[in-house]
Image (cartoon, rainbow, N blue to C red; front, side, top):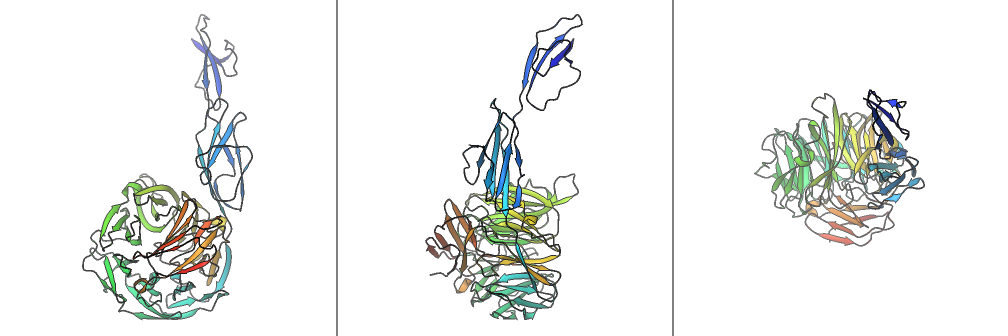
Length: 579
């Protein structure tokens, strides 16, 4: 028998199309067909319907745009309707699309089409970020590029300057409300410096400077005045055979006195150093949970129990893990295997940053590693993973993306547009910095070209309120002898905090600030926030987006002291000390 068919709704006859090969349909189709045997006998015509869910097209496509407002156009078939809901406005309400949508802030949309037969398309998610181009200003410094740099206020008055550590000297580029002054040499510098850290080590009210060279040796400089430092060995000294990878400040036992965790690449040599009268000494017992070869570490309170924890990047292809503190100087290991084990192949997790990325009052993590997408692939990429802390109940991986492989010197999380959702910078070793916009704490989208941050010959990078306007600027060193400042006109409201601690912890490391605004709670924790060789200010401003007024502000120091500030005024700097 032979089969004849039509797709125009008419009855099939022997003069209709003869079925000879499989049919392919790309839209709703009514198929009618019948069989005819060799004697001309016909069967009764049969009918089959093939319905395709309606499709939605959108313009412009999802991404980050240099604009204060974006108009979205949605389309579907002539007989269909489009429904949408906006995650940050009406997350549970589907609204019928009529006129083009205007968005003036970062937005996550869910869109679905429904045709006359009530067939529905699969909901699709559209993510948009809006940015303003960064303003640029070049400062001619006039000597060789630094190995590392940091932004800090050595006198803890909330007036940071930029410090440059070169091959031969440590210099400060003082900033005032009228701009930068001439650089001042502070001291001779050790050669081959890998990273810099700065906070008040000895409790004298002045932030000091710690450098590590490529041999794993530490060099400590005590600050005497804003423009005078002196190399010392008595405050903090490790042996000549040390292979120090990281020095992490934390209040390990909650007594309000700053301790140190020293990560040593040698087996059994990573341990806490306790402070007494401004001097640090190593504890007898090493942290057994830390294996040889560990690469880097951060501190923070990741399970929300007001006890200092540690994040360890163990090196090689081992997965990062947490050490939850018990408030007495002890730690218990917590694996991140459940949220990281399916990310790539042979991934080396080398970089991490921590802050509250989704404005829920919990300290979150962003991890960056280099590896392969598949077993059969030889091409390496960078994996960027965003992890949410679930209010002390574990972790959830909410976002993973891959970007082109590049040599990184570090990562940083900061909120230059003050929308309340800190963005991610992947800082290249010799340029190639990538800036990723945080879309409502749920994803990171490439915004490098939109904000105008690309600068191929860029070197060290740090952030701080160098312009004295209350919100941060990027300080980026260029190989041509210029220090370039990037600042973004803030899209949102903000509050800047200068938090001081007691004598045992003048820099207030580990202090939490929680600022409520409607359903959101913005958490910032004082301390080193990323595994970058450079260092930004220890506490950057709290962005609040387009709020009309702030809610209550709570400050909790590491020893449990607390202050409540009802509805602080927006756009101001608050200087806070324990009562």
